[in-house]
Image (cartoon, rainbow, N blue to C red; front, side):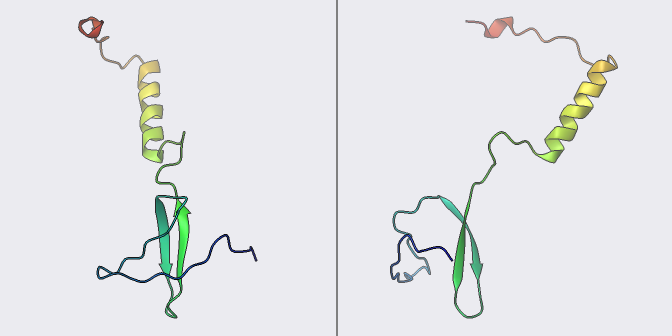
Length: 82
C-alpha cells in the first residue's frame, strides 16, 4: 500500500460539497461506498493525440471514397489568404 501524500479532515458545505486542497487534477471519477468511504480517481477528459472510433471510421470511409474518385471539386480558399 502506498504512503499518503497528504491527509486532512474536510467538512461538507451546505451544498454537499467538499473542497480538495492543492489538487493536482481538475476532474475526478467518484465512487461512493455504502460504508461512507469516497474514492476519487483522477481523470483526463480527452486523451491527447487520440481520436474517437466514429471519427476513425469517418476518415477511413473518406479516404476510400477519395481513392475511388468519389470526391467534390477543390474548394477555392484564395479569399481567405492574407
